[in-house]
Length: 565
View 1: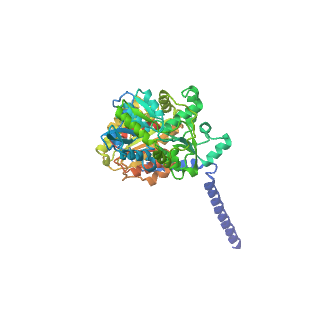
View 2: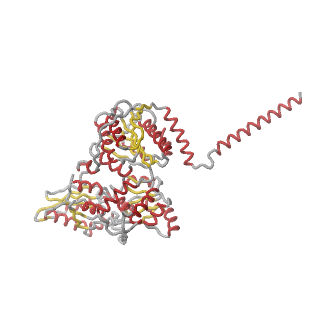
View 3: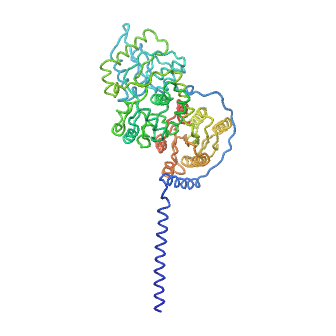
């Protein structure tokens, strides 16, 4: 009996030890199964599991696409320019005798971005007379690239144009537009590269100095995560493109040596922003080590000077003034008087206060660049910016009941016209959603056949039912992830076109962490939309959000596709 109790105690102890050992082993496996793996790998594994679990809850239908006729004429973003009323004047004329001026937005915006606005208002209030009659100006703020598009296309001609730099003027001349440089500088400004202080110190230690050449070398060596803006729309982005090409071959920006250097450089660029605002938001997230910005914006943005070092590059941004077309003697005189007013001591003091006229000792290494070369550089960028990546994108279209009528018609117009700017080597798919989710077109190269199927699929979209936007995003994400498994170098993108109202299926809380882990940028285009909800979605992975309407959505999408696809 005593031996039996002793045996039972021993067995119990052994059992307890076994349980403890099992727990230790199991816990050890659990704790160590991710050892040696990066946080990125673990996150991706968890995201894949979440994606599969979410996908199983969703009703997914496959819709057979039909072919439809397509246009083989080359698309031009200028053809889709909205009516000029989309850009109402910041300053209206106050007299019958006046000139109209297009101005770049860093000086025709609000507050400290409104230097030329304030000067124009003072000019109009000054009672200046020519030939015994009072004169005034009308000032319309518009991005330099888009302003050039209006002028070159002839869709709307102002009397004068003051872009940020002379590159736009040279391009206008090369395209046969009648423009004349009247004044080289209204107010001084300089573009620059902003590097985080830690990265700046690191590069100085290695290269000895910071300039555009050392920065491009560092990017090419994958030592820095750098971002810049769309050179078709942004003055700073265009200047950066030209300047970068010059670091590889200063004598011939389009030589084989320059192109080869640019391709290597571009391979390590993670981000080309649609707008400067998008670039600023990405900088705040800490994703980038460096990005580009004008000095006037740099000094007027709280927090940047304490976190980043500004290094000038490229041609100066001194706001030249061009006359457009053949002006009458009277209009020439009004323009000259306005330029004199801008260059007065009082106006220049205001420019100083608003952050202009700094770094006047900066002398560019580059000389003027011919307009033909600038245009060819833009085309080169479009062709080569993703030379080492296969672009793969899925469009996610809202066909719920709230999109019925004008919103859906605008969505279709956006996709059909915008698709003309997509290169044939890009892979494209289409998903639509209401209560359920439809795969309207599986991912495939955007050749003539896929374009025809895409056109038919978009044309046949109809609206009804609830709004399961995040269900559709899950389905589109799964399509992209599966494509990535087949094409490892694929660069993935999502484009969500919606009014932003979600009332069915999964929510942002369900999918947000997963989307962040996959790092797929989600560009959103809103139609009569809950813009804040769409902006929040785009901000997950630093993408652009466009507030679309019937006037300018096609132009905006064309510009976006030039930047991203």
